[in-house]
Amino acid sequence: MVHLIENYYAIPNNMGFTLAVDKGKTDKEGNKTYDTIGYCGSFEETISLLRRKVVDQRLQNGLYELSEALTVIENVKEEIKAAITNESDQ
Image (cartoon, rainbow, N blue to C red):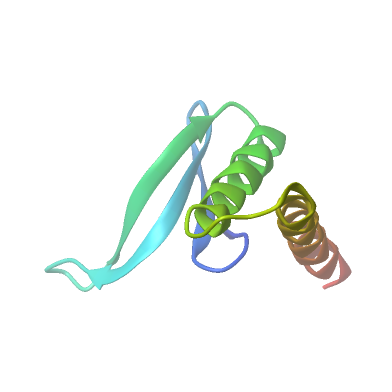
């Protein structure tokens, strides 16, 4: 399992990766529970789906001008890029 950003994870499976979000709960055995966002054939597809999901989540409440929405999109892109860079530096 790969932690991406916030409470999002890429979980390897036999066909690629599952993008999942930590629900903040545990099951009866004490294991964390996750909601599946989507299934992807590659890690790159997982990152793309993550970007779309986070942008959707951040823009869903409120009314934005185009320039403001583009700023949100750019900020999400930079946040993901920073997470990738930090992981590769360790």
